[in-house]
Image 1: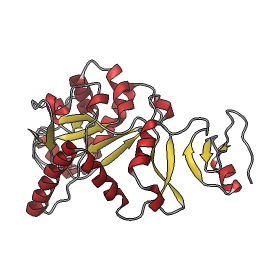
Image 2: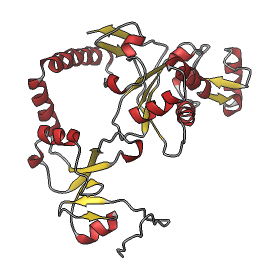
Image 3: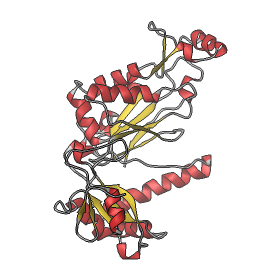
Image 4: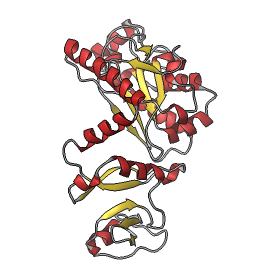
Length: 302
């Protein structure tokens, strides 16, 4: 049954989420939209049209090749932390994204050159290791800290390569401060089965932590600098010794992994937390990439 909600109203099952539809009308919630039999265009009022960034996306991607049923594809962008909304686009046919990327590359020689070099690196790694290679781009302009490459002694264009086991998403919508956000991120990094807890005294592993700009701004406001951020991440990324079975507890104690708190830190030193900023302005997530083995990240200019 469809019913309009009063301003600010909500119940256990339905929240007021305005959606602009393809008929040019704004609906108070997805139920009303569905009952009207129209497709969603973007989240928010039709009086607040898509941003310039979205219009640029429209110019790049050939939407006419898309199938008709709409699906959630990405974020709307906003400088307001609380207004990063989701917008709707149809699902593309196979190859459309690749076609759009090729168009961008044809218009930007520097971008094309960088991608050519990255693709060669990926091909070399795949040939020699059989591993899948992925890439994450830092948004230096929206970072409250110096670029990762510069912090690692390589100013200008830099590429950092690190072996990782995969990606871990960290999400939160409750924290009220940057300190609380950093605590959530740090505690999410430590779990008993990660490779960083296997063998050694904790100085072998490195953890890459990718933080979205809205979170980075809040975290930076509550901490004196990137070194303080790394220190707090390392402090929070620890588990009680009691979390492990007896054989593991004995091994961790013999390796000197238990600190004065009776906790087992994920890393021995704060600088083993490699922090960078990436993601959209509506993004309320962090991305963690754990070490696969006792290897170190390498940063080189390009």
